[in-house]
Image 1 (cartoon, rainbow, N blue to C red):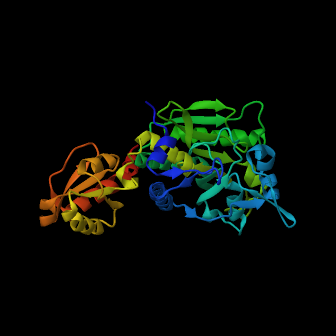
Image 2 (cartoon, helix red, strand yellow; image 1 turned 30 degrees about the vertical axis):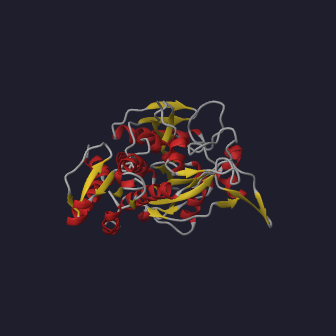
Length: 406
């Protein structure tokens, strides 16, 4: 039986929606927000260690910017109508790349700065039809794990390869897989920017990176972005539907349209290549997938509640509260209401349960239960906290092993 993230998300109080807010505009409840925050923080730190510099940019832009980038001509059907603001027409952005191109252009750049890796966890908006939005998979407002690398042409293939390795690290930590790789190319009947020579060079850079990383892939004509070919990392959900989890793209088109330049080693001016990439896509679509893959029982490092403390009776309430206070570095809850058996069933998706009876309250120990039903021998409270913390660290760092592999 397949798992529907919409049903499970509401059952577990992860997210919800309201017709007064509108279709395709879900809101995140405290449990879902806690899990999402942990994943967002992980991606931020992963990128920072990989040399990315994070920025903030506005979710609006002048219509002229999107005309210049090519979005208005090639993607207008997916954009919300412009809003009049004085003499300007402002548009909710459908992507972050024009803003990042202008961040690169904000001051003079030298070849010594390249590759310049700019990252942002930023909001964007898509004018999805009412009939197709639902849950977290198709939304109108999303937060995208996005980045753009500005580099010399002879650096681009190595940058793409580095992105592919970083993706594997993130996916291992999130518990996502297996994945398949797709080289998305131009196809008939669609609008594209740039000339044939640009597209040939961009495709060659992507093929070289895939070959260097020894990655098998399928070709998908007609699935390219309007500004360049891309590598899409595909996953299959428990219902058998395939979708794109992550992507890396090579773009010569927007650097030309925005007239991006840097001072090269010869003293002249050169145009950078723009590598677009997202390690995990939007947080909405990512969590729609994670909820279904894990059945709501998330890995301990981003579980909304990592530890539930269950006092057997009222006499153990004080000991339970004291232990929860000691475990404040974890996401912990104390549950008092109902029988112990009912509370255990209620917490079946929580990674660790700490049952505190009279004996544990007397000697400061806890008896941990795992969500697979197994039990650990009673141990001191501090030892239990360290055990859970170590498990969370090990899962969060699962990708470290991936980087060590050839």
